[in-house]
Image (cartoon, rainbow, N blue to C red):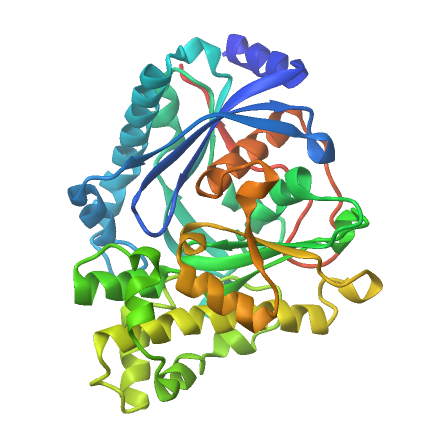
Amino acid sequence: MKEHVEKLYALSRKPSRRIIGLMSGTSLDGLDVALCRAEGSGPETHLSVEHFKTVPYEEDFRNAVREIFAKRQIDFQQLVLLNPFIGLQHGRMILECLVEWGVNTSEVDLIASHGQTVFHAPQKQHGIAGFPNATLQIGDGDHIAVTTGIITLSDFRQKHIAAGGEGAPLAVYGDYFLFSQKNENRILLNMGGIANFTFLPGNLDASRVFTTDTGPGNTLIDAFARLHFGKPFDENGRIAASGAVDEALLNALKDSSFFEQPFPKTTGPEVFSVDYVQNAMQLSGRNAVKPEDLIATLTQFSAETISEAIRNSMRSGETNAKQNAEVSEVYASGGGAHNPALMDAIGRLLGQNIRLIDELGVAGDAKEAVLFAVLANEAVAGEAVYFGEKKGVPGVSMGKISFPG
């Protein structure tokens, strides 16, 4: 054991570290694997992506996870079995990537694994007195470490909750360290299953950094693209573009207590589910809405709730933007950034062009995996960064360490 601790200490003192960041999102399309080289830490972090690949999941894998994903009642044996199974699968996928890239496992210092979220339950959502914020990611880090022979950090969200956060969004830390720009206020918008954004102040003051979920990103669009069209997502927004927004249904979709909650806040597919949409259809009397119109309406639902969250948080002073200039640029990433119908709608609602995070040097598809590599780098080589007394961004290091032997 002493050998592992000494190796970890040596890693913390190296001028640079090679870290594999992993991300598996709620879309269940595959595992994002990013091999990064990180130098420095905190606001002085310099990171380059050496290799990136999304390893697609087999349909049997997706279906096994969907049996327990975002459900209150599940087969607990399935949950218990999937925890090591996903860890083993992710470990094997890493090894396959390293072979493809011609990189030996001995040349990699750390793995940073997000795991697979199966349930997210902030206190505002579950509402049960006496119980804290909660979230659960599976894909055991010990199995990844033993399979690959590489020290693995995982289960990042639990420390965030223990320190007073809701376990999300975690992108804010890497966003601040990698993408802040002096004299330019920025919004970094990530549209995965759930959408969130980070406000980065141009004066680089960490206490003015702000982050929140906004509501659905792609999760509802993807769910009904599968249900009605047999497609995993609305490729290039073509289905949405062929339909028309149903205003009555849109208003019913927006009638959720989540949108009345104060910022910052988090949510998940536990709330914004197929049942949520079907209930809104029933309440609005729009059960017979055409599938194309439904996809168009869900796309507009995401666009409006994203833009309203950005505008309202700015207007309320949540981001302290009033003490600074107006937001200069909005940079998008995640699957939603590939959807022109969604991007165009947000741009119109905000009254500005939405740019891609790729312009800042990191491919949008790799961004979340890269940000977990940043969190692992902070855990072994960083110092505490104070983000102020506001909720949602505790200044803590995150990640549980699994040694390979």
